[in-house]
Length: 308
Image (cartoon, rainbow, N blue to C red; front, side, top):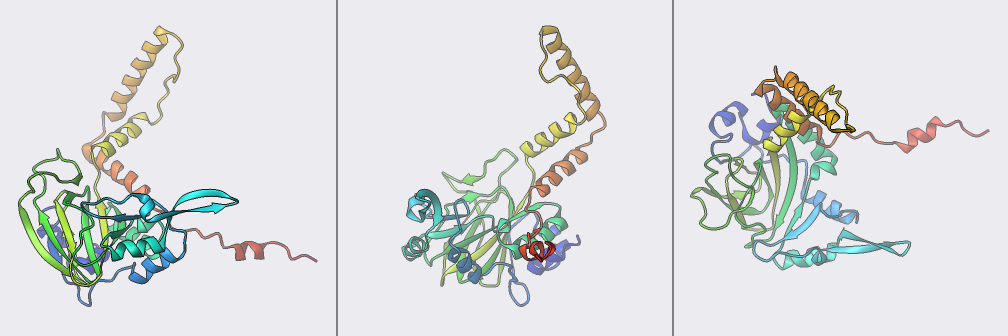
């Protein structure tokens, strides 16, 4: 596997793919520590802009959920109120009170993160997204849960104690909170600044802030699911379809159904499972944030004729 972006966090990508990928969790200690495109200063800068808005920001507690009014505030423009803006004062007070800060889809609004994850996504041919968690010591932001993604946890500051449990036995599972008897534990570790934790897709996990203010970046590597495959099948089988969309009578409805089935049978006759997987993964990749194309008002202004 040629994946230089992944290598900076897990070492040899081929060895990682053989020993860990989709098999078991592991802790990695890169030479010189974690290189992250997103830092504590970037968290401060994002909040300081005043533009950060839900759903990109949330405050959480594992067993004591917080309503959005606890950390968001409305603003008025021309006396019209607009809600959902992150409130720095409320957020700081909640952090002091033991709540965790979650910043979602950093790759959508932070340029260096978007650019680096675009490289990683291209290497893996899988969509990669970024989330940041800030957790005070001794507190837990999210209960035991499963993610519908492989996760690389890059510890940026402080430390966090993790418990990783067995993955699901087969493909009939749901992501989200795990209730009842927890699965068997397969890894317990304290992740310190500069270290990386890999959690395979579907493996249940939970974490508690340890020493200092724990800040970590979660890189979620998204695999396709049945819904993605079905949508790709629809796209592929519907290509170049010439069937009346609004048949006028019973005979026309029957003719449309017959033509539709004939078209689909022909369209999928040569389709292989590998073709379907490639198409679904490409659709997932295409949904990632595109490279920036700055407006550059300076260049636009320079392009106009200078008034005489």
